[in-house]
Length: 573
Image (cartoon, rainbow, N blue to C red; front, side, top):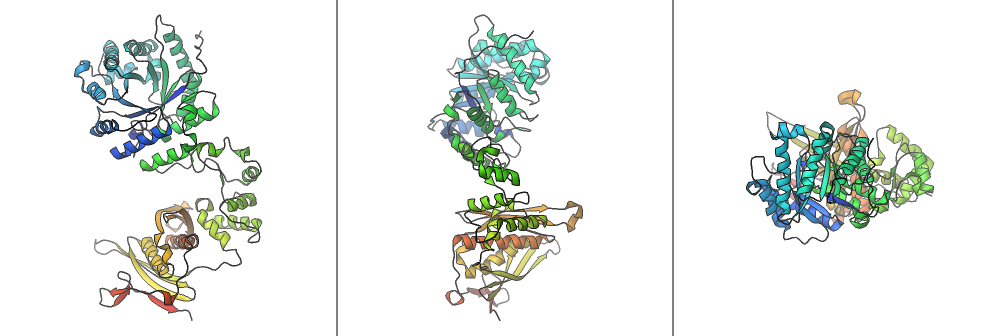
């Protein structure tokens, strides 16, 4: 019969320990420079994180430099931890390079991982079970004797426990006896089921806390997400008495990642009665900004579907959902989005009804009354999406759709025609050129431009033409270009959807186009992007007598507008 789980005082806080700077950087395609690591460390400290694990100084020079730089930082909330392994089986503690670097990092906390699974002890380390216990004890004792707080990470603990319970428990006792007062149970392979986590934690606590003269320890959890259970297992561990939780921002980490600190923190702060360190979960209203900022530093596109902080976390697309949220916001939201610094929004799509469209239009600053019937607009959107458009990913195009229904709407320009040429001869660098005729206020301007591809050339030519009439759009530029094949069965004849993200320093917006011809789809998205820029920037039309064309000799000795290409203004006839 399983021993009853030991009780734990309800007011003992759960302490969060962030491992983004070490575990997170082991994720594929994630590389942080020294400056990046220092920025992330500062952000975590300002958020209120009580522990920040900075890296493994024994593994690479950059982490040594990080700890050297960190010594000159002013830490408001966090205690910095250096991470490393137990001594090599052939080394004495004082002669072990890894342990020496851990102490030289001069951090108040040192986290040491050791082996709990005999498979690793014997077949990976080449040590005997007894040697491994000595390695754990010697390493913990070495850092404790030098005045450091020692956190012991029992690597592969759950797999080791299932393979040999008594030996796995003996490794924990060795760390405790040597002076570690925080012992972390690690699901390093990430495959342990939640019910197993709960049962094993209960047995560990019952067994070790029943030892005679056993000093009290704080039990910790460190989970990986290989079975997509890292957050669930961390939460279950807390419910089973764990009071130290290790995780990474956005769940970054090796293979499928680590437990997501963002979700763990929000769950604990908003869904449980547990006291937390940081108090209240830290700057909870800044959680979305923290998540997205660290994603940008790591050069990882923020996950729109991430719980709590993703752009879609509180987005409502279905018509029934949208209508309900319009009446009672919490009807389809488990928390107030503002609690974590996010916001709710209604998505405009073929699945949404007139309520979604009306409310989203209002959120964007548009009144439909007197402009267009929401029912008719909803029907139009459904038809356009059936033709390949997708307004949920291009709200600037949605705003333009509304604007074009206004009685006083006048298009700021019209693309009359364009040509795109791509040339590649005899292995030389590919050349792309576009020419375009644009009509503005009855005047047609014919321009051309080079580019590194046909879309880039078309973009440059269109901007050159419009810049002659609307100089205020010069700040607008493309920041992302995405193509989606809509009917893959048609192969190269498939309809494509192009989404263009643009910005001008003050705002960011997305527009789209769809066609079986990728250039035509791109031209449509580009035209919407620049019309939106003209509208939102408030730039005014500069008429012909108020502007001039700068001409310069071209390669043939003639004159051209801009760099190498002609610009001809023709009055409308």
